[in-house]
Image 1 (cartoon, chains in turn yellow, purple):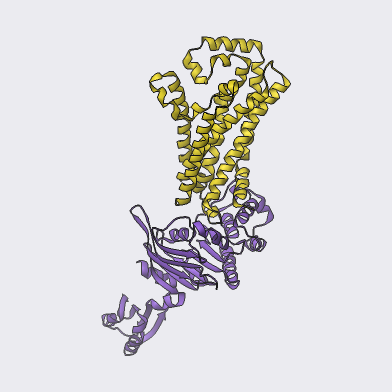
Image 2: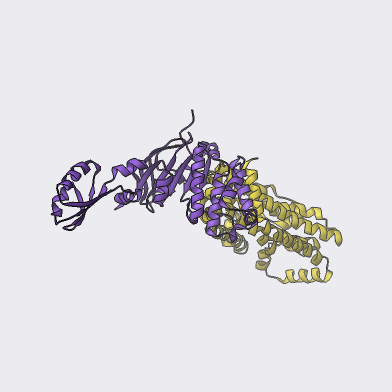
Length: 267
Length: 295
């Protein structure tokens, strides 16, 4: 049995307790969004509120007004809402930081690394655990939408339309997670790695928001990974190749750097 | 031909301004129990971590079971069992889950596990509990089992009896003897000198990152000075004996000296000319040899 598989099962055993409530929370939230979107009074209220809201507030919600006020758009808000982003971020930060820097800080890395396990296997297992968990979470989110729309169909709204949105959500946090693996590969303590990657996530989110509402720094917006995640646009026109390409490239580069750094460092 | 378990040449390691190892060379031969002695900070754990490929030396060469650790030497680690000095486990795993996971990572069957568990007194009930509920002694026992369960060719044990009660220590010595009888090599780092004296064939003493003494336990003892205790029936001039060695106690009727083995015959002859009432010549313990190096 390969070392990566043994390590992956080990990470699953240690972190499945966190994955279940995150997945259930996301599924319930997305189901709730279909419920909210189906309430005429709610959609009317939200539509009026959004029309009255200042553009800065809409930018914070990452909303296109025209889509946001439609039933289809309200369901899509569930994929850009801070609640969904935080649920995904918890996994994208927790697992990479725990399986490399966390093991070093706890002292358990010594007994793992003294076995015939290549350093690259440890990074690969971290990436596999990250991606598997994100798949469960993005799948749970879409399942919530599917169940909601199946139990209470909304005119002109198909659950299949949100499958690419869930995929974009997955890719965004896979990209952040790969950066987290790199940060973790460089750190000696989980706490340090968590602080760095959380700061990076929050900074990226804030930069994206501020750059939307403050034209003077609009040119900095491409530096934020959140610029490449536009759920309402995906709902309207589908996945943008450019956004997917940037996220995939950043994620792959971060993972490659993590392989190199972790193979060369002292544990 | 079987590869030599440990060969290290001129190893060096610095942590910033701190020199952890300086020109350290070691040869450990197959089937021996090798003691690695030194005070805190002497470089024992750094050496073991280099042998395992956990850290890289700044200079020198090292081969473990015939291969350089780390990188391409990963496969050689299948033959190594390691007990860290500070044993850490996953608190949310049970003892049994911990052993299963580490055996699967080793890629070898845990053929010695049941025997070790029985000898160290870890039963099924203890193994079913989460490791977070274990006492320090139980964690150390679990650490020994995980290190030795796959019958390694080379066991690297850092402070193996830390936290064990005397009865379990006794069992550990028997386990080391069995490992040796089975052809395994044991590299044992310890502060407990009587333990090293009891179980080790050869010893290296480390100070400030360098080996200051190296050899079999008996020859190390022999190399150290004897304590000669002489009682006299009448007053003598103790200072007249000072040229034989170091006077530790100099009273008119009671003298204690530290004397090199080579000077013993002349001293005994001289004592015979004095009104000698009693004389004792004590062989140094390994502890005295150790202290002599570190004073």
